Length: 624
Image 1 (cartoon, one colour):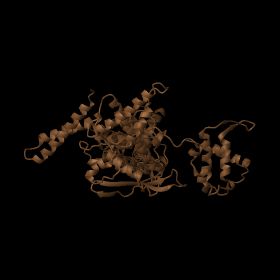
Image 2: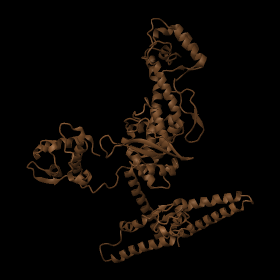
Image 3: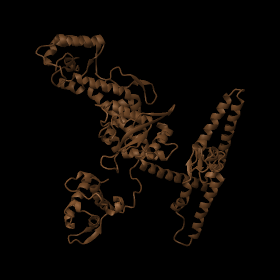
Image 4: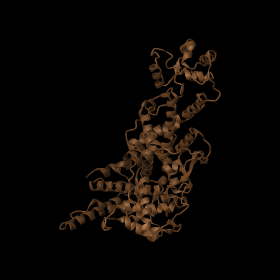
C-alpha cells in the first residue's frame, strides 16, 4: 500500500521534473511527457546522468500512479490542471504499467479461525441480546445530561439548602432508590483531601444530589448540616453506581443460565459499554456484509431500505451506501443485499446514534484496529466472561482481513465457520446475490475472488483423492469407476514420464505437473452435502433430467440423488453424513405405528440406501 507521504513525495518530484521536460503548465502535459517521466524514474543514474541500474516495479507503479491521480482528481484543480482527454499509456493501470505481472494473489491474510469465531459470536451476541438494553442505557445517559453542572435552570447557593436537599433525599427513600456513588478516583481525591476512609459519606455523589435540588455544585461546608439526613437515607436505601441498576436478565452466551445484562456502572463505564456495543455493530457489519471500510463509513442514518417479504419466512434486506473505490470523486450510490443480523446491526447503530437525523453518517470515521483491541479486552475481561463469551485470542484484525475471510468462507461451501454461527444457506444466498446483482453488485471483484478460491479448493480436494487412489483408498458410488479410470490415466502418464526420463536429468514428474493434469477435471467438481458431483456431461446429470433442464451449466443440488447419479462419487469424508442419515431413519422406523405402511416403506428404502452406501464406502476405502 502506497501511503500518502510517498505519493506526496513522488508528486513533488514529478512537478520538479516537468520544467526539465519543457512543460510549464499541467494543461500542456501530453502522453509523450508521461512516457518520458516513466523512463526517467525507471533507471538509477549517477551524478553524470549515466544509467547504473534499474528501479523496481514499485517505483514505476508510483510514478504512473501520480499521473493517474492528477487525472482522477483534476476537478479539484482550478487554476491549472491536466487535459481531460489525456490518456497516458493507453489507459492501462499503474500495476500493468509497472510490469508487475498483473494483480496476482491477494496478499491480505484472512482472519484466523481461532480469532474470527469468538469475535463474530461475541459481536452478534452484543448486537442481538445486549443491543436493546444498551439503547435504554444510552437513553438514560442522554437524560443525565439534564443534571450536568452546566444545565440550564441551576442556581448558585448563598445558603445551606437544607430543605431542598432533604426533599431530594425523601424522594430517594420513597422510591427505594439507592444514593449515587462517586467513581473511585474521585473518592480517592476526597481521601487525599482529608476525608476519613471510615466515613460512610466519602463515596456519595453529593454534587448530583445538589443538582437534583436545583444548585450548580455542592460545597463541603454544607456537610455538617446535611450529614444526619444523608446518613439516615443511606441507612434506609444504601448506595449504588447510578447507571445499569436492576438490569434485566439475559441468557449467557454459553447457555449456562441467566445473568443481569450489566452490573451497575458509573457514567464513564456506561459510556464505554455503549461504545463497545457500537463496535460490535461495526464488526458484525464488516464481517457479514464484506463491505470495504470506505463503504461502511458512507452508511447513513436511514440506510436501511424497507424489508421486502416475498413469501412467509422469505425476507430480503438491503443497505444503501456508496461505492467509492475505483469510482469518480464522491463515489456512486449502491445497495448491498444483506442478511438479517447485518440489518439488525445497522438498526442498532441508528438507535445508539447521538443525533439520528436522516442523512447523518451512521458510523462516521472509525479506526477498526484500535476499536477491535478495545472490544477484545472487554470480551476477555470480567464483563465479557460474566456473560459467558468465549475469550478472543491475540491476533490482528482489520476490515480487509474480514472481507478476505468472507470470500474464503463463501468459496469453501458447504461447511465453514460462518455456517456454524449464522446459517450458511442464508449467508450464501443473500450475500452472493449482493455480489452478483445490480444494485448490490459493488462486490463483483470479491465474487471473482470467491470463484478463484473455490477452484483452488476443488483442486486441493482432487489432489487429496488422487493421493488416496495411489494408496489404495478408492471412491465409491455410481461415478467411482469413471473417476478411478481418470486417476489411472493420470498415474499412467506420471509413470511413463518417470520411465522416459530415466536416462535424462528429469527423473520424475513433479507435483506441479500432476496438478496441471488434474486442474481441468477440478473445474467440474461441485460439492454436495454427502457426495462429490463431477459435472462433466449435463446430459447424464440425474438432477437435470428430473428437472427437465438438461442444457443447464450447473447441477441442481436440491434434486441430487447421489446413489443413482452416474456422475456422483462417495468418499470417506462423506461417511459421517450417511451414517447419521442411516441412524435417524432407523430411529424413525422404530417409532412408526403399524398403520403407517406407506411411510414405513419409504423410510425403509431410505435406510437401505444409506446402509448400502455406507457399505460401499467402507469396502472401497479398505486397502487390498
